[in-house]
Image (tube, rainbow, N blue to C red; front, side, top):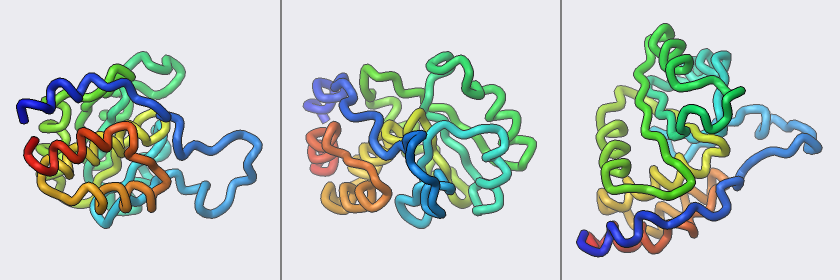
Length: 174
């Protein structure tokens, strides 16, 4: 993993992937903003306090916030989402990712959070991209094939190209 720290400060390109514009007519697919990556994790754009009940109804037991407080002052902040999640009987973890990139401790925190989940997980950020990319790095570090990671992320509408070199390096123990 000597080579990894040099790759981690990569800037995030294309973080607006998988968003819905105001001009699109909502369909059943876009009405549910939770995008399933696999049977244990979904990702989402910024959630509201009302979305906690929807997540709970879908079997989510852990919410991971990958958005730093203050990034959008009008959005619910970490403490508000955490309080609502805890009140609904859900676990909550915050692993904020800024636009400067990812770090090894953030990848390790994602692995720890996912390993500790007692059911389904919902990770969110502004668009779902940072959550997907962090999930991708965590999966790679655990030895999942980069092509499988890219396929699952792509099926959810996300492109891992901004971190593909890191995913490749992590999956080989680089």
